[in-house]
Amino acid sequence: MEVQLDVAKRNFDVRRITTINVYGDETRIEFKNVNFNDTPPENLFRFEAPADADVLQMNQ
Image (cartoon, rainbow, N blue to C red; front, side, top):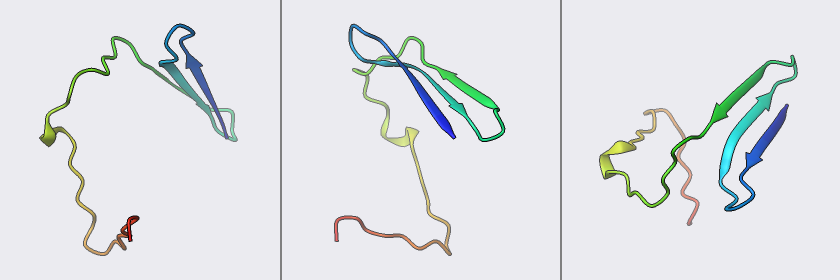
């Protein structure tokens, strides 16, 4: 497995992530018009662990 990051020289923002698996398949994700100053709404991200999942508290 290989992961390549394309980073902008002027501000070090990640512009592209490319992964190549053991079979040579390539997946490319490109980031355009990214704004890091926006605060996303609280309800945008939601995660509920499955009932049979073991949940570890990292702060304990």
